[in-house]
Image (cartoon, rainbow, N blue to C red):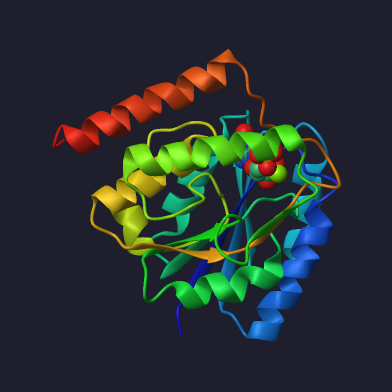
Length: 239
Ligand SMILES: Nc1nc2c(ncn2[C@@H]2O[C@H](COP(=O)(O)OP(=O)(O)O)[C@@H](O)[C@H]2O)c(=O)[nH]1
Ligand SMILES: [Mg+2]
């Protein structure tokens, strides 16, 4: 049986920690999965760290990687993956705000085998988006086809953070994103390294508790554009 490492980036998720860990515990037990759950607490300023510390006693497979100060989603994902990649066969990435349904985990895992990187996609046939604000929906409707086209990726939801990935992928790629661009960068690097990408439909919901850390400002737009420029140059420049 594959050993599974579940990486969950968290920044100020005090209202979601316990509910998420409880629902993950149930699905791991029901499915008989052998997993390590690694939460990357990225300098949270609320009670996330304390709640995680208390949860470790309750869930023996739970580990916490702490950044003393916030270093960004990309660093958290990369550090989490690096910490587990040599210890597990498959890495799962899941948001810590309950917008990724733990019940969909078995379907993602089942697709690893025919593929190396499986993306949970709201835009695949059978996928859905529930409760996400119109602006965020519009943004992903516009950006995803663009990323797909420019980067030649065979998946419809490149920005999705719900993924199951063969650890070998993370032993190969070298992403440098510190923020939200990490998802697009890792998908592109995996594809360029010859790994097989696939997607399974998921239903993405919007957070009921806590606040989103995604803020589309000039800085974010510049980071996306410069990353795209780099990846497109790499793709067509043979680099
Ligand atoms: N470790 C870490 N996690 C983050 C950071 N920013 C966001 N996250 C987590 O990444 C996930 C997705 O972020 P979220 O704010 O919900 O973005 P959205 O889903 O795009 O609105 C959540 O679990 C957040 O707690 C960060 O700087 N560091
Ligand atoms: Mg979210």
